Image 1: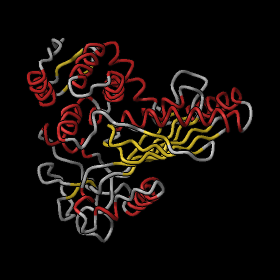
Image 2 (image 1 turned 120 degrees about the horizontal axis):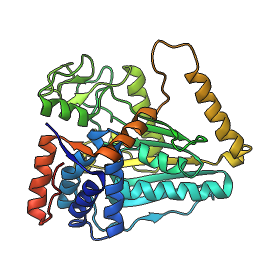
Image 3 (image 1 turned 60 degrees about the vertical axis):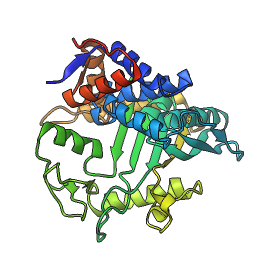
Image 4 (image 1 turned 90 degrees about the vertical axis):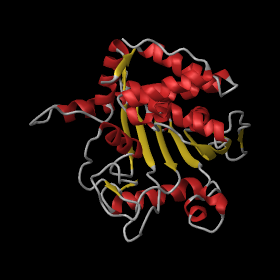
Amino acid sequence: MPVVIPAAELGEFVDALLGAKVPNPGHARTIRDVLLWASLRGVDSHGVARVPRYLELLDSGEANATPEMSFAGGPSGVTVLDADRAPGPVALTAAADEAVRRARAVGIGAVGVRRTVHTGAVGYYTSRIASQGLVGIAFVAGMPNMSYPGVTGAAVATSPLSIAVPTAGSNPVLLDMATASIALGKIAQYRNAGRTLPEGVAATADGTPTTDPALAKMPLPLGGAKGAGMSLVFELITSVLVGAPIVSSFHSDDPQGRVHRQNALILALDPAAFGDPAAFTEHVSQTLTALQGLPATGEIRYPGQNSAAIAGRRAAEGIPVGPKVWGELEVAAGKLGVTPPTPA
């Protein structure tokens, strides 16, 4: 059975664990915010379950605990952030905020992110943009860990896409999806729970489909060639666009090609550049109302509505943490001299 920890206490615990490895308190809080956001919304595969992995990345030096990030010059609406191997939440939060600043000035802000490490739940960054009344769009490319039609073994990445659109209410429409049929973190959840995977979502190392989570080494593309094609294109408009190719480097003879890294493209669109921003959000809300008023055989929800409802419940009742993950967090706490909160 999972343990249940009040959200505020879990956040303080994660902050303390990360703070033991990240000298900049603001950076530690930013990573905490991204992970806790995912856990609150029920995206447990990208939530506090990732804390041990972040600690490993920081210990190994794959993630830079003291990055010197820099924005390159460029047109007023466009820039590139060299993240200097900063943890993804630190780099992409800075990129999202810069995209908003530029969009406020010229209508659109586009920030390419080069050389970051594990971006976390991409919906956090687009939601951050939408909370300021702008449309947020994010693409991420990473290390090849997913099959591709006709290829034996891993070829491309489970690259995510997120789009957040502000509404007249408090929660944006939030599309947050990967190009894979299942996230690697979810395969681990199935493995930890001893559950069989659904058909057609994962494969062994040689690309053979399997439902055994112990044998599953990589996800299969969402929709077959469609998901694989999306992943390839995301690599082109992120990694290749900012001059830091991953796929070609990974499949070359260069050993540095296997060093963990990710790239991203964050966009912010200001509705005021297209017309009346108040009318835009009102029309968005009217569109959702029209959709949810259609004849139905069940409940009609828009993207992000369910996870927002889960966040409300977990904020009030606490966040469940699986026993394996909680054990790993307790071990990390013992090593770092951090006192874990008491489960409810």
